[in-house]
Length: 167
Image (tube, rainbow, N blue to C red; front, side, top):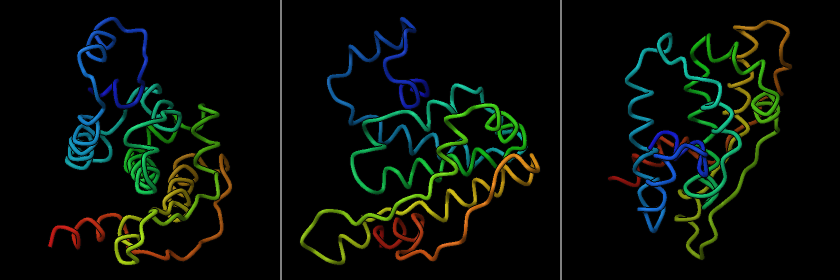
């Protein structure tokens, strides 16, 4: 599932068979939740991942990453948690796509719904998360990246939105 989330369409035979068995991608959202749980349960110094995971995370398109505004926020948040590992920061510096993604200005988008409160809670924004990513890379690899200007969030954090939705 890990490769399917980060590298769909990989040439690995087992992954191709798994993709053929699943007629939908609805299983990917819970899989990302499990990956978040595993990453957060692992101490930062033990979160080192292969380069293909970081590269795949910033390059992958489709469910759940591009389905709605929260998907991009999930991607940036997962990258942030992975970059808490100094090894991943050093790996990221050698990956042009990861460095490009981390240096993007980010975006703020509200969900397309006629209910203002729902749009507020289903919104996504990444400028603060990407800035924190570049700060971590700069901390572990001085001079490798320029930290962006701090921007204020318009909505609560992803965790706060999730907690309020579950109340």
